[in-house]
Image (cartoon, rainbow, N blue to C red; front, top):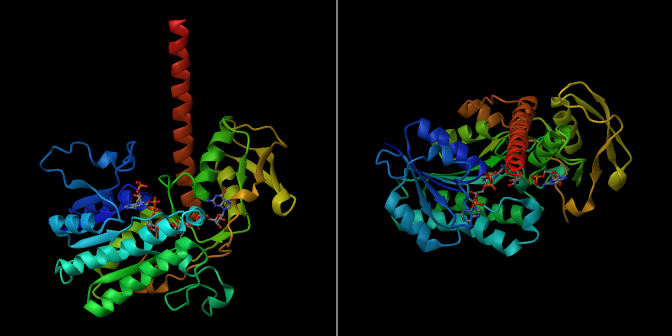
Length: 375
Ligand code: NAP
Ligand code: F7E
């Protein structure tokens, strides 16, 4: 049985990847951080009985800042594949905690590579490093001749997160070249899902739109509506992480959809999923969105209602204006065929959040009923 170790298993990608590897028959080890509250919501459905000897998912307490702990876990689990997905992954927050992000996202990668090397596992263990389109920084002059970012384009990170991840990228490449290790960077463009962290822009939008449609929230405040991102579905992207480690030769790969969309248009698409049409008026920090039509009888919001404003506190000190990836290499050499397009992604996220918010409303109603009976 193949053995995989996933750092960041409790995150969006870690949870989908664990599901995929279990389906493929792997023994999956995951590293989770100690926390004062439960932090395994995204994988609880995979991990029902830790006492079952046939359980193929095992969690280990650990942290990417702790070399001894990582070395011990790798020694104990002897993985065939390591997926280093653990990271402080929020770009805006990285400006508040630049040293921490350097330690976890940058040096954390080195700790994994060095542990594998010191344990003499460099010929056994294949390593996937979660690199990112943030490395490009969105500089227009660095795109390829077709106007996309691919594996040949220069990097220019624009945040402490991007700078930490560039260390992770280069140290992975360096260990591959210096020690002949099978270590790859997946340069993944933004990928989202119903499991996306609530403070990333897509999930923030789909949660708010679901609440507005159900009458639970009045409006949403966002930052830069002009920013453009190449958004794919996390389920498609974790499949590529696995495929990257199955390739004959260790290399670096861009995974993207090749389509870019503004934050503003993502908002429009999310509202349209519940039949609500919007008009945007004003510019810059004064831009607002108003409801112009409600075509679904279940989601009726007052026509003319203001549902979006800009809050400059969400602006970043340095912004990545536009990301657009060219996945030709992965398509041609790995057979990359995503199942979801942007419309499918928005639909999946909106369905997830409508369901979630309705469940909250039902729980609230049930609570009121119980209170009434007690009174
Ligand atoms: P995520 O949802 O934020 O998950 C990050 C994971 O890392 C969580 O399990 C988190 O644990 C863990 N983690 C954080 N700090 C850690 C530490 N000090 N030690 C050990 N684990 C730690 O991120 P994601 O969207 O799944 O992304 C997965 C990876 O891909 C990340 O490295 C991210 O930077 C990278 N990436 C993401 C995208 C994207 O669009 N999603 C694109 C390119 C690259 P807790 O649950 O305890 O917080
Ligand atoms: O921002 C703009 C914001 O935080 C996207 C991470 O997974 O992908 C992610 O990083 C855009 C930016 O993701 C709000 O300014 C507007 O231009 O969803 P995000 P990100 O920064 O692109 C890359 C590839 C990673 O590697 C990262 O780990 O949306 N934006 N208004 C906003 N963003 C947020 N978060 N909140 C807003 O209110």
